[in-house]
Length: 345
Image 1 (cartoon, helix red, strand yellow):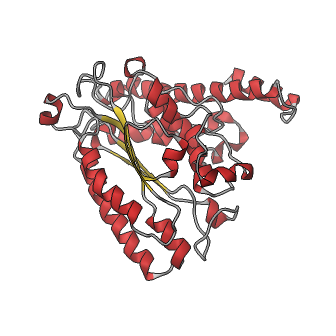
Image 2 (spheres, rainbow, N blue to C red):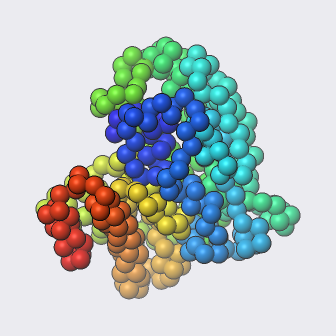
C-alpha cells in the first residue's frame, strides 16, 4: 500500500498496520515505533514461554543463554527499533548516490552472523556456549540507490544484481547445509518496487509490487515432501466463503506479520490486520517425525494450520472490536456479520 517509502513499509512489515502519508515526516529519522510489533515481541517474550517451530531445542542451553537478534544494513531499522537489536550494524541510507556502503557492510557481517544462527552453529560453536542468533535481518540498499541514481535499466543495475545473486547463493547454501533436525526459513523480499525511472513513494502498481522468495532448509519438510504438499494444499481458503478461490493467490506485505510471528512462536501484534500465509508454515515437528503412512498425522498437520488461522482471526477481531468502541469508521452491521462468520468458523 502507499506510501511506498522504506520507513512506512518497514512499519507495516513489523506491526501489520497501514502507515499513511502523514507518517512520511518520520522518514527523516527519529521515528521509533511505539506500536506492538514482532520485533518488540521477540525481544520481550522469553524463549521458554514459546513453542518454537523452527529449531532443535538441544541446540545450546537457551534457557540460560537465550538467542539474540542481529541486524545489518539500512539504518532505517535502527531509527524504528533503537534498542531491540543485540548485534547491530547500521549504515547510512540517505545518500542515494552511494551504491555500495550499505551493501558492503552487509556482505562483511552476514557470513559471521550466519555462523552463529540457531540451527546452523557447528558442534564446536555449541560447546563454547557462545550466544546464538534466532533472527538475522540484513537490509541491502544498492538496488534501490541504483534505481534512484541511474534508473532500473542501467548497466549499474546489472552489476548490483549480480552482487546480490552471489550473496544470496552463499546465504541459501549455508541454510541448505543446516542439520536435518533444524528448520531455518529465509524470507527474501523488497520493501517496495520502483517506477520505470527508478523512483517510488506513490501508489502505482510498479511501486506497490515487490518480489517475495521463501527458502526453507531441508529439515523443514522432512522426508515426506508429498505429505507436506498435501497439508499445505489442503487449506486453500474454500472454508471462508464465496471469494475463497482468491484467498491465497496474492500476499500483502502485512500478511507476513502474523506469519513471521507464528513462525517464531510469538503473539501476533495487537493492531495487525494481515492474514496468515499457510504456505509459509513448515509442517509441525511432530508430523515431520512420524510415519507418513499414518493418515492421522496429515490431519494433525491440517489442524496445525487451521489453529494458526484461528489465532490470526481472533486477533484481528479483537483489534477491530476494540477499535470500533472509539471510532465510527467500522459499520456496526458489517462488524456483526463478521462476528457471526467468525463464530461459525
